[in-house]
Length: 305
Ligand code: SF4
Image 1 (spheres, helix red, strand yellow):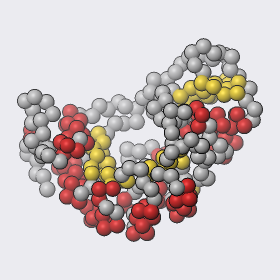
Image 2: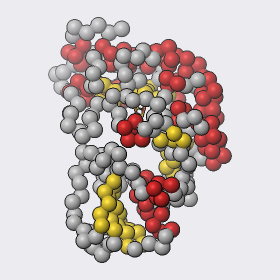
Image 3: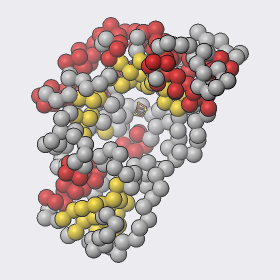
Image 4: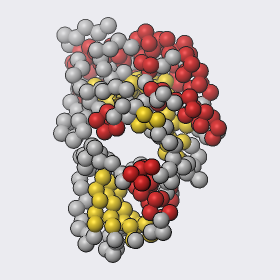
């Protein structure tokens, strides 16, 4: 068969599903290529779209077209035989010199702004896929790495491969001394990303505890703003991170369909916090994102703790 592929979101990051699909078809003797602009004579075309807001590619093909991934349908699944395969075709994305890995899918939580639980269900371990033969490091995309009941074998796998690692989903609420011990053993490529998204939870003491095990400069804390949080709650989370020596990173809320636009305040706060040279040298009140406008304006009638 001749298989055509379309990465509808563009090639901004390797598409996991398309790499699996391609590897599976090639291992069954099929030819696989990007559809490009010129070729039409495919027997089957797979289109993958992760983000709902990405405009669809509606080019017609005179063959079977299979659409998948969260941008089309949050419950879409790969065919079982491809899902089970651990083969990956990294040759689709030669510009990315790393491997992608998952040790688990799903999550123990149901955060109100997140689709992971709807899409993947309860947390469950999955078999690791093949690594990129030309990969220089491993991007670990688990949603909640340490909630995986088999997290220790995942750590062992990463230690055995001796490559630098980027861990994407570390849930600080469940982190304990043993997990921190193993985190310190890994060759981390950049800071450990944690999150304090829900302002109703006060994670100050938990973060303080974690900084006893992991040096705070190794931690970066995502702070979601614009999703039912007040300015006081935003500033509280940011300032607690600052006091503990943890780098905060403000994420203005965008809904899955990209229908909400972050407010000017959320964008100004992100600009202030996410630029270390600004964050370290002036207060938010003194920050002037535009000529003639000081962010003290946002803080009027606001009591900052
Ligand atoms: S912990 Fe992370 S992955 Fe899990 S539901 Fe919350 S935001 Fe989603």
